[in-house]
Length: 368
Image (cartoon, rainbow, N blue to C red):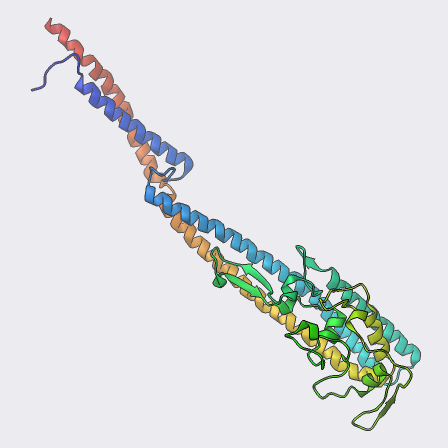
């Protein structure tokens, strides 16, 4: 049986507790509606908050990985653009050399051909020397990617380990200068050794190891009197071009430091564009240079496709993580709106009833 008391107003205490709960519930719903998050602090959902933090770290990592891959695409695009120009120049040099090999051009015509070839070779060297991406020299052979043969690593995921990188092969970044294409990097050079840079000597660049006849070039450069396999004699006695040494031309030392001296181009042009025989033999060297550039361009294209696929994969992975994080952290606006209205009504009714409960002890006055 309920009693009438003055010191203890149980009805008021119950109304106060319900009013406090309604106010807390309304404030929580209001916070979720204004922030859009179901979890605004650890007390809302401790486990969910921890999982959401880890997912947000992954999402941020995927953003960076996507940016990394995009920068890699830009680097490849920059290198490809210059290589395309180099390829066009080499094709023009080949056309001119094929003209010179015809045997119908006199001294002045050969000199004109030689002049254009020399200028195009100089422009190839200039382009390869100045082109860079974010401080990385792409085609002069001095970058760490080329000298260390480590290539360039693209971090295309937010985790560590080799499965999260794409390595761009170092051959893309090797020197594409005239010296490199026709001498040190020529795979048919008798001194060519792809595994030992210090053995990339230029002395006998004009002597091939694939059996092709270079009698005319050899005689011209060495100043010798030689006979080709078909019996034709080439006598350049007393009119030699000294053997082309690393220290004399583009490469200043065994560390492959690129120098300003472009006299190798003069040496090549003077040795080649003297008569139709030397020009004809030089065609195979140009073909090797064009093949070198073409292979790099093809490799760049393959890498671009792979990196673009990685970007697509990153986008899908990021989308899935964002969706999962949303289901954990984001607020359901419909539910929170209903909760807000419910607690608002409870708060108002609790406040009204609290006022009534506070008047209950006055009934005791009627008994006095």
